[in-house]
Length: 298
Length: 298
Image (cartoon, rainbow over all chains, first blue to last red; front, side):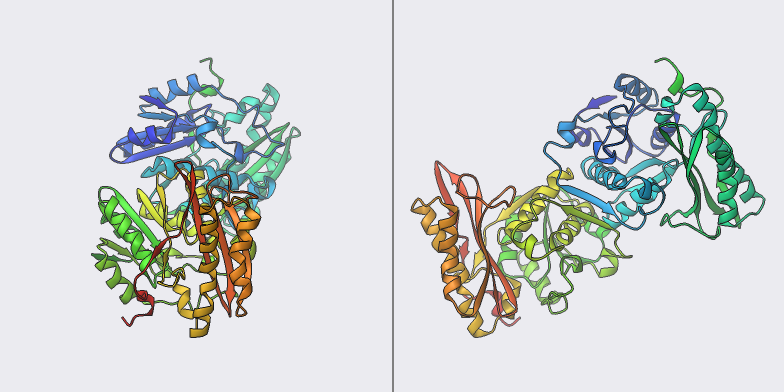
């Protein structure tokens, strides 16, 4: 495996079908599942590690976002990647970037409403990574559901010849969706945070029982979060997988998303719901048997 | 030469070093000079022909913009291009495009101030063409000087591995810079329109005589336009080639641009000024010996 700092080197090391996993580092099994998927499908697997300042608001956690490149490199190498692209800020933004990629419509609800400018930063850096790395397939986690909608739309609108794959959420053994930000949680918050997955998985069970009402599914998902004193719910929303618009009923591919604040940490969870043989099938994700590598000593 | 309607076909027909000439059609010798430059440098020459609605304001001339695909195809074939990419609207914008590429700073002066949103439309379609065609080199005329600044900045900011080449203005034998919009001019306007090139070429002569003051060069360029009753000057500006910011003095690579309205037709002209061996050398462009193909019957 090679570690490179420039787009030119990343392109030069790629051959055949190129799979690309863009990350902000501090990797966990969710990221590794993306590398695994790329390894199965592609000739070259390139993983980028870059904490993108453009997608953080001034009030957010850019400075404290967890970083450990050595740890990340070891994990990605063990997963069989070919190239780690870890650009310094001077490669990504050699001068003040004047160009922004914005995606309207799909970014107006949920995270877009709560984090103004966030998806502009995401769309801009992903467009830049797509242009500079030139992959054939790119892998994103379903956990950041609205990000996936935004990236798919940007990719189609700008005619990038890149297939965007969304991979299932990976969960701790108690259900908590993996996130690098879980490391911010203290032990009591870590326990309280279970309420998000309890909610969305209860809604998934209701879908399997035949529930189709957006309002009822949202209420089921919100209930455990509302009941947990240490958590403030931002939203529980059934949304269209293509547009991120709220849905009154489950009548097209959708995701049921919850967002909540646990102390100063914002957490997200969701279940994607797709049609399969006349049924609506929720994707509850993948459950780890043991504690995530996020909590293990390197 | 192949004529294709989809990005996928355009990419499939490309091999080796790919030179790309994006146009809005109704081609003239200025466009052909770009095809010639691409033919000299590249293995595959791809020319796109698409009148991009995103870069026209509702009040502008989208509906009347001259179009003649058969004529364009014959000209491009004679120039030795390999591929004409002439996408229908349904290939470029299959659904309402939600994604916009905006470049701030360099688009705030001159054309950007007079045509709000114009450069957003340009940056968006050029980013899309770059993503979908994936060329190695792209050729633009120096005539649209601020467009060239905007495209260069977008390309660098988004890390497209594409070299952007700016080619000299091609002029009628009396000096008028070629533009598809020249066909809007009636005979009296056509004569009056000479004032733009008279102005910028007089300023070029002043540069060769040693003049360095932005204000004086602008005044020299504006004088023939101001003296012509049928023309309204929008601006005469000495601007930085990298930032499009106005310059008080010629102390870096610059262009001296004029814009004016002749009846309902807006016309642009400029001279780029580059350092060469301790001198500042204006690029007066290339003068045709006979009337442009714009005025010839197909």
